[in-house]
Length: 409
Image (cartoon, rainbow, N blue to C red; front, top):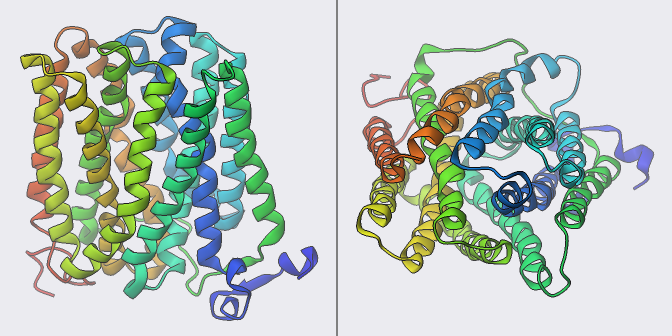
């Protein structure tokens, strides 16, 4: 198929006649693999880079992470952008922005430079994440969604595995610089995004999406779960890895090795989790996740209170990451209750809701961290329990009119 043909618009029904590698789901898989090559590289180096190059402490990392979440809070702006640009095009542009920003991160080893490059890369990351969620729910059949999303998560984990594996093997062996690794990770994402731009046609979803902000009363439980997920996840993303560097003195290759174990586990278990969600339902899967996260966060707090060691801390980090992999049950819950035309605007609104707490929480908890790190994780345990209470309100078989256990639909 020629490049000119590839840029034709193809309906989802007609896309089934394309070669399998060129079908919509495969594009979702390839984009999911492209994202972590830049983002996972940025994450793997971040804590060591900011401590060694910019002299950050808990307050500094808190402010950096708060700035990183501002574009997530403003993800509702996607609704305006898709008035002028296809969601598929926006996803690829966002990957390009992320990749370029990560490429130049090593050039600016100062708090000012890091704030700027972090903001730009975050715009790419969060706009891609918003649009990809929308495309996934539009392009994947409801009956196959949990299993397919599990494979997409697995593809992203496999890409992270490649990035982290190379970093672990080569960081000390070849005495790599931060700048070189950032260039390679970000550049790989840029190359894959450009290939996707050329190789895939433009896919047309069967339901034209609303291009205005949608807030529906019947989605209130989904909004509440998104808010709690964003608040809770920030503590894990910001402070769990920072603890491994600050408290236990992990070096770059050791932090990366820990991430490597996480993504091996995700690559293996994410498809299984997809099948589990399809079998037991979103409510039971989320209840299992939130009970597990509550126990993990309490154990994190115990590391500081009781002086537990590095092996337990590393084990909890891996277990924590696995529980978070179940979060795509929240996507399939929304897919089951949503009006198909609401998917794109609600994806944008939900990302904004997810990041309300993320804008101020890391900075605020950075000050708490320097006085009582254990209390940061105790607060996270409380958030997980709140999420558990909300998850119990999901019906066993959600659908329009039956969004919560209180609905009589």
